[in-house]
Image (cartoon, rainbow, N blue to C red; front, side):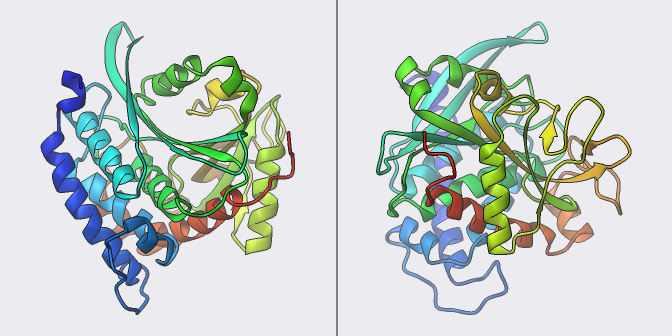
Length: 337
């Protein structure tokens, strides 16, 4: 194991213990306002699958944001975060790998890593589901993107022992805020066979906290994955919207960079899930809500601020997103390559 991989190991042990407690509490409905009997936590993935949707994601996001805090790329915070994520995957019965890389951004060399966990499906066709775990240097990175990491881990636990039509590749990307470096590295490492087998990529980028739950794809790229998500949301009663039409691009597409971008540029179908507010006049997403100041990339992106300002919002949106994502990953999608 490399020196980078061993750093933060102490936090990983603590994180694993915290995770067991989180799963037990979530299984009892402690984070969803539900009553129930706490499930046994000998097999955390079983406890997750029987817990109320969104409970584990909500608790995990809060633990990550509070215990690690800000996590810029190539810092101890980012190292501690990926140790926590790797430990969580292991708790859920996966065998995650940590892929380290060195890249350049803004004139500096950045040492980061992706954490990858594979869920074998009924076919060799692959669907990539990712969320970046790094953050900017202010706040706690709660909405951007501890909520995405929490959702990624919950759904991984939920479907661990559930048949899926496709093999699911879960990826916690490093160094997203520095130019999607982790996503670019992952894509470069894919073999030609893996690329041909990949039907699409789902990006969980701040999927809770804004006014609206949103899904979008890239202008000029395949849109069937986005459209399948909209259809599934309609059938489940999940209030999912698409981006408004903007000059030079149609509704339902985005231009802002995110970890789906390298995959879209490789002509893969992508769907970006975010909870945003939309400036309808300009047709672009903004990191704020209609009733408050910007949150993403500010000192306000903390558990204390968000949960006080918008009580219950993150928990409710993660519940809806967990239900939607589990449905998508366990269903045959509209396009069957």
